[in-house]
Amino acid sequence: MTMTPLRRRAAVLAAVLSTAALVLTACGNANNEPSATASNTASNPANATRSVKADNGTIEVPAAPQRVATIGNTTLPFIDLGGKPVAVTAESDSDVGLLPEDQQATYGSATILAASADEVDMEKLAALKPDLIMVQVPDAEFEGIAKQLETIAPTVFFGLDTEWKALADALAQAGNVTDALSKQKAEFEKQVAQIKETYGKIIAGTSFVDVIRWESSDPGTFAIADIGCSEIARDEVGLDLPEAAGGADPLAWTAMPFEQIGELKKYDVITYPVDVEGQPTKPFVPVVETNTWKALPAVNSGHALGVFCPGNNSYGSVIRYLDSLDSALATLSAKQ
Image (cartoon, rainbow, N blue to C red):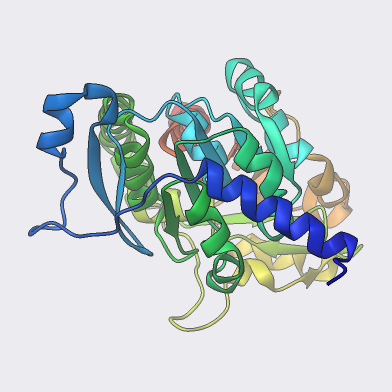
């Protein structure tokens, strides 16, 4: 039988995957809790494993993985925890640009597998010999690549509905970076408590609205943000921010024409996105340049506050957001 180039490539890939394959054992313990495999630990610590619960089952992973590959939304949260993946799927330049310099260097040192999970070069991934693969992508996308990934290395998968704190917990367990996670959690909880204590009266008696304009927004439109960092401000800090009714699409997905900017006058305080230098983000600049924005009571009274949001899917990013929110709320406190 004559093999086509595509078939020969598949045969080569199968051989590579077979050679590189680790024996995977997807089995649960009694409590579905991460645990060491005692027999392996006793005979050879390098072969010690732990059971980690993920959306694709309870997966046996190395106790101390050394060559982690991250696919989809696991890359930046893992790097935020101090992880150093050997291979990643690509992140946008804008997201990478928001990272601290050391994290940008970590990302830059990893091999880029593809622009997205469904385009991952499996031969390249297998050649890198990862001992753990962590994935967060849509369920259907994972189903299309799961068998190939699981042949290469133990693979832990988390669906997009995994809340960011739960994802951080899971990645820290699987990637053996729980010490870093504990420190981040302590800092996060301390910072939230400090903001609530310092600005409690302001928070309780003030109506806020968070506004956004995406890079992809149509010209002449903006939106009220109720997802992302807005959720942190509302759900963790307690700011009175508008949000969509239960079951409805987020307000942030509804484009509002600039003619509706005037409706923001009913709120005491407006927060809007700024970059790390404190300047309105490039997509939001057209909003602040309108006469309607300039005429808003909150803007004229100094109650329009720029807040930097580098991300909301890891503790490190959220802590940086809280730093900015703290500084913004301090300006309100100074005016009272």
